[in-house]
Image (cartoon, rainbow, N blue to C red):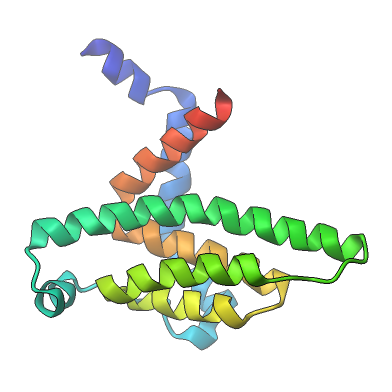
Length: 168
């Protein structure tokens, strides 16, 4: 038990907690300043809408949201990697192919539509048509903020696992 407590108090875990806290505190401001045209800065998810429209119990929807948060945080890494690849293609004079970004956005869009996560839906719809790499990065960050807002604890655990996996 004591080793579990010490493990959670490691400095890198504290930094991750601070990062999530900052994203929760400053997320709406980031979205408002950078993506104000989407009108999603103060969006709050209504689980009851998903429960009613999908005819599912709260616990099942909550589990689906956790799965979604994990999926988005993993997808965020993939989005950044794809954007980086496109930036490299620009530098090397190659034709830009946004197909992989569009496919990843489309895959995630189906989930957010099913769960009725309206801010993420707007973000992903924009990602499917956007071909400005700077805006794509902003959308990826906004998507991360949206996911963290849905379930900060799940986001923390997921980001912590990703960090551990990357350190191996």
